[in-house]
Image (cartoon, rainbow, N blue to C red):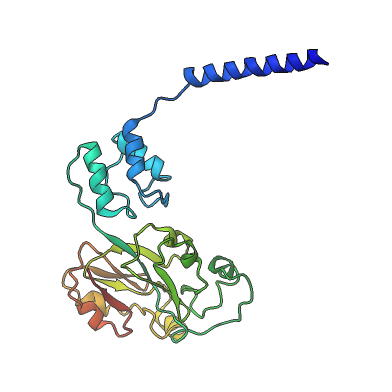
Length: 261
């Protein structure tokens, strides 16, 4: 009885010794700078920086493969601290926030069918594009709100609304929207097109009271070439927009609004 127990005990002891030696011999050297950078990052692991998460971004910065200032949730403070560790000096970072390219509220659109299923935009969109009369519009079931860790998203009269003061531009809501209605943009005085419809003008007018009809009045009004109409939808170039507001005044559908810096 004792012999089997002693054999198992000896095997366990030898295995423990082998594993202990292997952990030392095969240990991967730690990058102290990468660890210091990771400790500064907010730990959101949102991927807004373009890397798999905070550890991946920290490792890339430590190797010189990425620059500080890509972490939107961390903002300017984190960018500055990362720059100090890397010895790159002050890092300028443009603040961004998400915005919803839709104003298809219950007042502006109708329901083409009554949806009775999971409270999920992704699920609803699989059923003939969802219940909204606009096939490009917000479904208002809150997939974006569910993934926001900062309380920046609310549902108002059937459409998602973002508070730019609370938004940290992590990009999670952008990824969660099955319609691709949410985009990140610089927080500055500029024009924003609150529509995503690429239908022809006549079809848009039938599905939404305020949808973009591609009339090109905004494009013709802009003196800086900041706004163009493609596939029946107006698009703004943030780099060229001066925030003059003339395109918003010219829009007959009032779908262009001015954001504040």
